[in-house]
Image 1 (tube, one colour):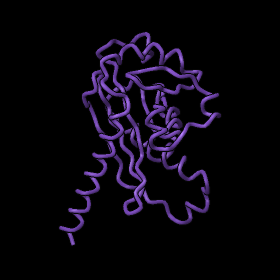
Image 2 (cartoon, rainbow, N blue to C red):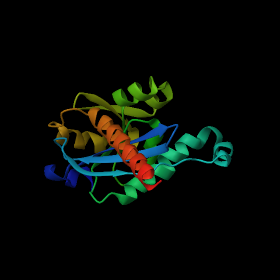
Image 3 (cartoon, rainbow, N blue to C red):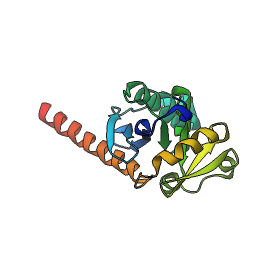
Amino acid sequence: MPANQLEKKDATIAYFTVVDDERTGWTGGLLVLDRGGRPLEFQCTLPVRPTRAHEILFGPTLRAHLVGEVIGRVLLSKCRTPLALVCCDQPEGLTIESYTQSPVVLVREAAEADEGPITNDMLAESECVDVAGSSFLVPMERLADVQSLAAFYNDLPDAVEPFERIREAIKEAHSQLSRQSAEAA
């Protein structure tokens, strides 16, 4: 739904991240919140473990492929809640915009905490919009959309913390899988 037709009550905000764990593999999570930060929906993938052939064939593009094209696409397809805005903390996550009509932004503080400083190339290709005390890096072609949405999220307590909720939920899901595997053995 275009931002100019969105009602305040429909201003959902989704958070997308992927955790790479040596033991389990790559697991993605998508947490959908209302504009005040309360959860509406959570989706996570089963761990994805690329084969050695995948590692060889995809080379340095493997991470982008897994984050955006494999995990992100699956999570967005499973999501039942209409999304107004999608936030990610990994630059590769921005590629999920091709699977949603919603703008996708990179939360700068979360990305820098997870990945290190943002590159100048990325800064040159995006604009910054302040939301809930954080800087959202927005592709220039989506700037007007995100600027019109930003006012809906004045009640959002923290724009970075939801990523930690996702990581904790993924950790809990991994623990449950381990317990189930141990019980089945």
